Length: 559
Image 1 (cartoon, helix red, strand yellow):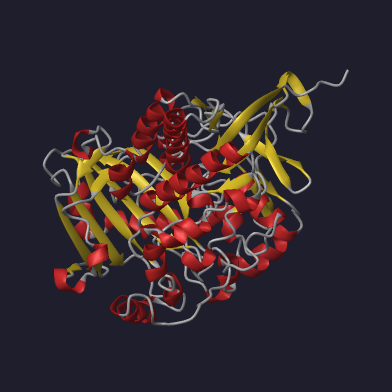
Image 2 (spheres, one colour):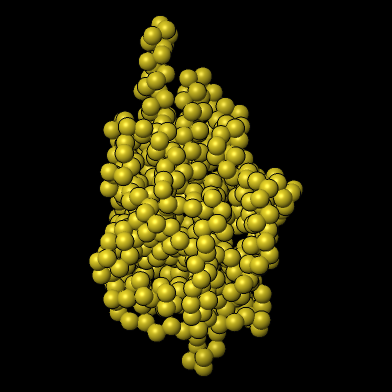
């Protein structure tokens, strides 16, 4: 007997419980309240309270939320003027701010006058835990009548021709061969008038929408960075709470864009991360190995000495900027946040832009509910974005990231010109190739030097993955899929199997025969921390990431 999917009718479905969608859900409910108050005062018909749901694939709220993060509080001032950010549990005011250039053995502090004003963080910015901030925003949404649900992994858009009608949740209880097991349950259909995709970086349904509706036809290819992060408990007083340090240079070579961040969340808790552009050319670069090298640098090592790693994670971030933004709406659906590419790469900040995109989308959705018009034209907030401070901010740095594709020195020179002219120079629209096109043959690569590890501070990759809390039911079909195993041999011959080094979770391992010859790639999908690096960087486009069962994956607490 064929089992039928259960269905639920909603007015608005938000896929992903990150800052963009939670802002949008909160702002939508507030807009509806204000609309009805005005309607009542004018004797007009009010809107019925909409059925609004936010879903997230994590086991708990914030489990899949990871960021640097230093927050520009502009959106909190707009949304929550009654709140004092300094008193909220997830935010710590920035007390000091410094940028260093790292050599292999030392560091050079950049004087303040060499740092562009937009890159300063002290005075009015906040170090935040995105996991904690997500939970706080979700509570605000629930107080407004929004349902916020976890363990819902959206697997497919529900559509009627070119109109999006909601999303289908992933099935649970499948066996490895894809057949239903004894605990099998069909995923629900969540039918909605408007579906908002804010799944974070390279969202699964967002990619389906962008590719299926050709939304990036007039945009630059999106390019990405990979951020690897740990939270480290250190002796109290090592780095005062509220300290912000950024570095560039070592351990990255001149051909690799990126740098590091060191934030003191508490007097005894430091967040340390390495961010590197995924357009790097060296096929032998090992991302986690470079992170270990950063930690072993004398300057960094002096800050974390005697410490203990308590959490680990990794995520990708969209670095393409203004020219990589796709079309933001189709009939029945909207893109927001990282899923659309709202990030100021120069400032390494995107939370405020993600929240602004959500707020602007909410304004359009409220108007659409009032007019019963859910067309792309009614939902598209691009014009409002362009007219806002967010549009101005992204336009000013529209060619920033492109300048670093040819190396650090050209990028630094172009950055100076870019800042001095408010983004006018270099003019026009600069492009970069997709990240997977950048790898050179293995023969031209340089292996990342091995760094000694221990059991507390300098962890090997598998121990770090354990610190992420990532768990997947191993009997389910692999959600990290090699599309054509035969291509792995070609990839090994040309690039020496780079997936075994660019993945920050050891999902991919070389399978060597008894004679030591390459026989393929073993996929350890249970290690996955959901960063999507594999889809982005694989040079033969032979890896596909799909959502695992709802509730699986990392379990970040303070990231």
